Image (tube, rainbow, N blue to C red; front, side, top):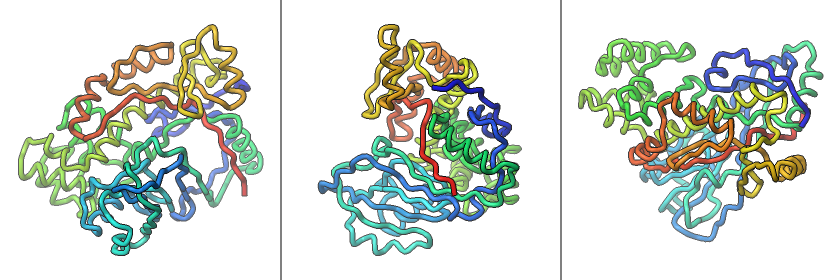
Length: 395
């Protein structure tokens, strides 16, 4: 891979989320992203989904300007089934037109006729024996319009982006993984892993951000400053369902922070915990870019190799030349391991840095195992490729 010189991100939010570097040098195109939801289209790409019959109805969900969790709550309410019956393979941006698969347990195709929600469409594809899970998602296909571009050399900037995408870009988890308006999912997740349920409640229902609506900020500020759930509940807008559920529980049962955070749907709680793994991944990847000599994605002794079929291997002195050949031929990529509830023994300098970050965050394998009981999900360790490539068509 051609050596490259990274450029530090000028954006504070990206740096806080571990996305510290760009591998392009141009000033970019400028402009406005998502001027309308239709400017950002996302469609999931799947591995083989086996529609062999079973209790899970697999549906294509198309939504416009809907946050996924709230959309699923409305769908479950309309169908008259528990929200827990709905599963999905990945979250999608709110301010966008998105297409993704969901599975709903125990309903019939004809039941979907009852779902008449503005800007939400459901189409039945068939029945499966098992629900959807994260492993079913192969990737995403995007259609993005950037409006009102202001760059001095738009053609040059676009050419650089297209070339970089073909060569390989840092495979960071994006801001939406942590919350677009309030990127705090990993912060709440760390509190959950530490068993500090009061802090989890305070961070989720308090902790105001500048870009929020004024009435929401006012309610959060009261809760953050005073801890008075009743006063905050009085100010919190009705549309803030999850914040209000936490506050209402604390009004009814003062001091029961574990019960309060437990009013949030388990799927959302599990996303908070997964965001901790994502944050650690981003920071490790930034270290890798920072500490390597312009070639962060080439294999080093002890690195993990992630093959297209999901198989993994470890780079050794004996196979490093073969690893380079496999990478050049697109058979595999170097990967970063995100520890979970299993034992984790660092095998490289990169993984030793991962272990240091876990210690810094106060996160252990036992913590992942313990929180599984609260959220009803298992947090296994997983590897993620350091870089991604994509074909970009400029318009």
